[in-house]
Amino acid sequence: MFAVNCEAALLWHPVVHHSLLLLRTLRQRHTLVLEPSCTTTSRPDEFWRLSQAGNYVSINATINSDSVFLEGGEEEGRGLSLLHISEGGLHRVQNPQHILYFISSSTFVEQKQQLQTYLDTAFVTDHVLRAVDDVLLALSTDEMEVTRQTHSNLMDLVARLENFLESDNDDMVQETEKWSTWPLFTTLKFLVEEAGLLLGPFPRVAKAYRQLQDSKPVVAHTRLVNRTVNLALSREGLFVQPSAWPYRGFLREVQRKLADYTADPAERMMEGVLGEKGPLKARVSGARFGLQPVSARMPWNMQREKMGRS
Image 1 (cartoon, rainbow, N blue to C red):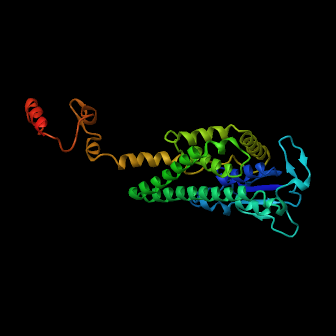
Image 2: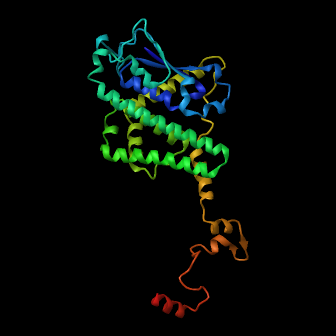
Image 3: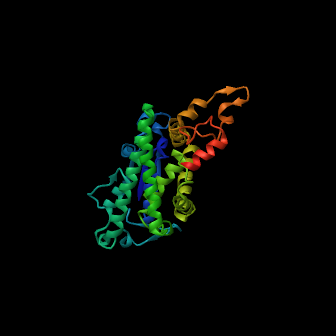
């Protein structure tokens, strides 16, 4: 049995859902434990470092974790489990990648390729979360050039994922039994639902996200999370509704600020300027600024002759 423990205020973090979905794919009995002790304490300054979630999440294994979890609630024999918990060994880890420390030696060889692919994917998703950290840090300093560079780096990583899906021929979204599917999905889910990433420029990523969102493992996982939250709220005590991420939707704010920062100087000069015929920007929309091939005050018939000679 595995128990994923986290503060209720950290329920939005992709590491929590990554851990639960990986345990489900490994067919291990698991549960989610929300700790109410800090739910009334707001610590946004500590939460923004997404890449350091190990300080707030723990995955505890009990000695009977060899049983295999099935959708129908049945259990297979203990010898068929991919994971093995020894009595004198490690029983607690901080990151979902460390769950595979418990992999059974009898199945290690046949799962070696999938294990390597999963670890590579987890490394990539950790890189994405660090890129989000960089954007948040740059945004907090109000240095727009640094914000532009860090935001561009994050978008490049999402574009690489788009290219990967094109070359992978949708295998990732068709086979939910792959371990490497879940670090990618949970990170993408966080970017879309919490960070406010718009998937219009990334059609392949959008398609993969929709397909995985409607898959059986994700639906069952969502039921588990909602049931756990509802049970915690129904108990008497100080437990409160889990709070949202303090920086929810920050990517839209970044894009709005970058649009103002990278706007053409002439457009910025026209912003807010009013005249007798209305806003200046509305009256000159479509006009050309900068160097012209001919003088603007030259008669039109002479302009055509000069342009023809050039």
